[in-house]
Every structure is written in structure tokens, then in C-alpha cells.
Amino acid sequence: MKLTYPACFYKDDESDAYGVEVPDLPGCASGGKDLTEAILMATDAASGWILGELEDGQPIPKPSAPNEIKPEEGGFVSLLVLDIAEYAEKHGNEAVRKEITVPAWINTFAQTRHIDYSQLVKQQIAEMYAHHHP
Image (cartoon, rainbow, N blue to C red; front, side, top):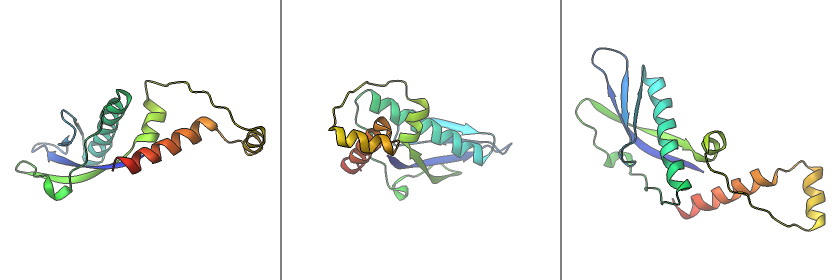
């Protein structure tokens, strides 16, 4: 599931560092020593925020349109693209074991193609979730 959220970037007057806030995700803030690091760190922070909500069974906030976000003086708005499935694969804290039963012919087909059931099911459900929670 990929999500896009606007973020407010604020450059430090005395260095190349940036602070970043994600207004749609209360309390989600980050920064970096330069713009590239700030984008990466903010993407990581926002992804962690979203994953935490999903793991707790909470709804995630709908992203605002970039033109709806008004940064404080001296700031600018840019978009963060979050790949929640990829982030969860690396950093997810909670996994729930589910067992499935499939017909033998499906199992044979999947085995000969080295299909990872777990990855396939997670991917499909994440896509379904994204379609129902734009």
C-alpha cells in the first residue's frame, strides 16, 4: 500500500538542516542535516506513524491536498510517498499467524513456482485495504 502525505519543511537559518512536520499525522515530526536526509527521515517517521495505527486497528487519516496545507513563514510543502507494505516488512513489530487450506492442485502450482503464500496474501490484502481507504 502506497500513500502520499504533504509535509512542511523548514530550513535552519544557520545550517543546511531541515525540520519536517506532517500535519495530517499529529505529532509526526522529523528532520535531517540536509534536504535529502530530511526527506528520508520524514518518510521513515510517517511510515512508522501509519504502521503503528494500522497495528493498533485504528483508521489512518486521509491525506490533505498539498494546496490545503499552509506552512509557517519560511517553510514549504512537499509530498512524502510512503510504501507501508515495504516498511512493515522491515519494521513491523506485530505479526499474526494465519493458516490457510488450499486444494492440492493449487499447492502444486504454487510450489513449482516458488510462490510465497504469506507475501502474496499480505500484498493482496494491502491492495484491497488501499482501495477501500483512499
